[in-house]
Length: 368
Image 1 (spheres, rainbow, N blue to C red):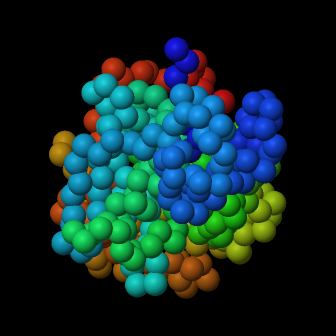
Image 2: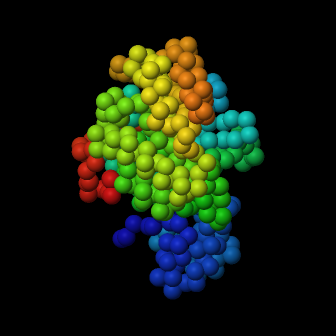
Image 3: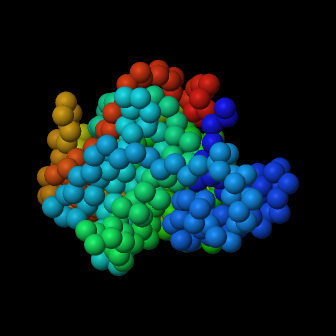
């Protein structure tokens, strides 16, 4: 028997095509999306404006599978982390970060990561596979439902106002599924988020960045972490394929095509590695007079890491150099570190690791 199709992973155009292939009118796709995303209904029996005959026809053909929760952890600062099953002996992690006036959900796009950045717990885990669009969208659906729960049932709870592809994995190495998920996040019949409230992060896959610019105009974050190629080759090994000058040129093109006010550059602060005043001046030289914003991220330790967090004094000095150069720069507040939910700490569980050469291709679709 053919496995049911998980409709959570289908953007509107795909869903319309799927219903048309069934001999149904395309408005059925809009009805279905209103039930799934507008009303959070995942049972055909409750979709009352679909005819009984259609529901019977769909019964064995479709599903609305959400990821299975293995563990939930609540941090002292309100951050929530879910560990979700992603197949046999595999797990991914999804994090909700509540803030005043907004709620950000950090989603994963892969089981593990092949980018091999040495300061990141996910990179230390290795890589197993890409997530499907349904698995990515499923994280958002699951988090929304979980946040609405209380001991008394469903109530108004924290809202997901922003979604960032900054969890486990390199989103642009799973571009096709990520674009489908983004389409659903932005669709008025999907989650209805503004394009400025959806952010895709990358370590620097330049060819895929150009494809993302053609397909979407969401916010962009780039894991830079070093002001020169010599150091970035070590901290972000994909730099050996796509050095800083090539990456930045692609970023400025993306900002122009997507009409962005700025590109966010993530810079983890590593004591004695990339946090000197001289390196701050190098970074300022790269970004000044361009649509750039810098997030300085205090390093979040994890078991086996060889790096240390920069002192607050070093972070403040570094930030001031960038501010003096006219570059908007903020120091990110560490959130959720008591449950290993902070930036760079997501590890999940990755087994049966697949070795992927940086910049290469593989059968499961990475880097295509």
